[in-house]
Structure formats: structure tokens, C-alpha cells
Length: 214
Image 1 (spheres, one colour):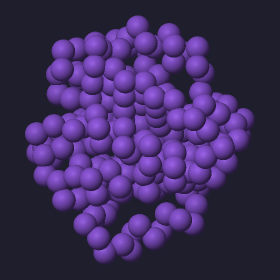
Image 2: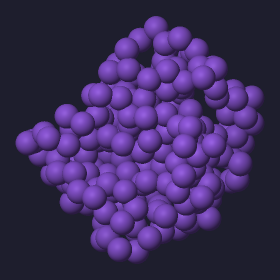
Image 3: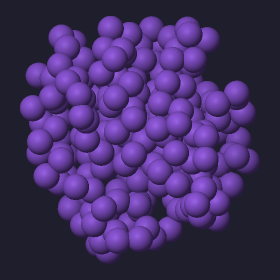
């Protein structure tokens, strides 16, 4: 079961050889994308049964925009087996502001962790995901992004989750986007057909996340 997962596509490796402002290093729980910023950090949980490196293209550009990124490698590619790994990162590294995010199951687990650590986090980005616990806290921001053609996300759960959101809540539907194109791992079972490119879907996602952090 755990060997059956979505692999990163061929576009991912080029980011490890870039000579720009972002340096990618392996750390104990995944990858550290060290960009030009020093104050803000974004921890990201991958979707279920998706190779974690599939999110490097998305996160690389966030790091380029001044927010360092920690991409977490989950046991067996399942975020519920490593829900608390963000805590290890926060304890080890010193940043003024901490943001958490995740895709699909990774987003759900990020939301679960955030609900228990609202005092140490500044915001949460949910990509095709929803919370099951209250995220209401003064000064805490939540961003929810999903595609209009997503065939995997349970929209009833998204609507139900709105009651748990703080006052600083933004919800964005990317017209033509689907479930899989937040990462670079190809088509996903039961997903809808996107009518925009993965580059466009990720561009809008990056802009929204950077706006939340700014």
C-alpha cells in the first residue's frame, strides 16, 4: 500500500541545480529551501501518498519571495504519521514568524497541528483541504485555496469548516484549477480535468500565500 504513491515528475530535479537565490538542503525531516529572507518561515505538509519533492517547484518560488521554506518528508508519504514534525522545526530554528501549510491530507494535518499551537503560529495555508477543529484566534490568519475542477476535495467539508475559521480568513477558488496541480506529480485518480496550466495554478497559489505572509 505505501509503495503505491505518486512520484515527482521530471520538472522537479532542475530546481536542485538552480544557481539562484534559493539554496536547497536536506534536513532531518525533509528539505530546507533557504532564500533571501530571514524573518519568516513556512512549513509545508505534502498530500497523502505523494512524493514530497513534488512540491519543490511551488515552494521554491515562495522562498524566492523572501520566506524560507521547510518541506516535510512524511513517514510512508502519509502526513497523519508525522503531524507534529512542525514542532521539531520550530524548536530548532529561529524565525520571527511561523506559517504552516499543506495539501489535501497534509493540509488537514497542518490544520490539526495549528489548532493545538495557535499561540506559536501566525498563519495557515490550506491547499484543497479543510480543518476539523477551531482555528479562531486573534491575529491568526487562514488562507484556503482550491481549484474549481477539483474532483477529490469534499466541498461540503470546506463549507462546514468555515465555522472554525478566524476573522482573518481568505478563501480563493482558482478557476480551472484541479486537485493535483498544486504539486508536480501528474494526474491523480478521481481528479477533474484542469483547464489552466499547473504553472498558472501555482502562480496564483504562490501570490496568495505571499500576500498572507506579507
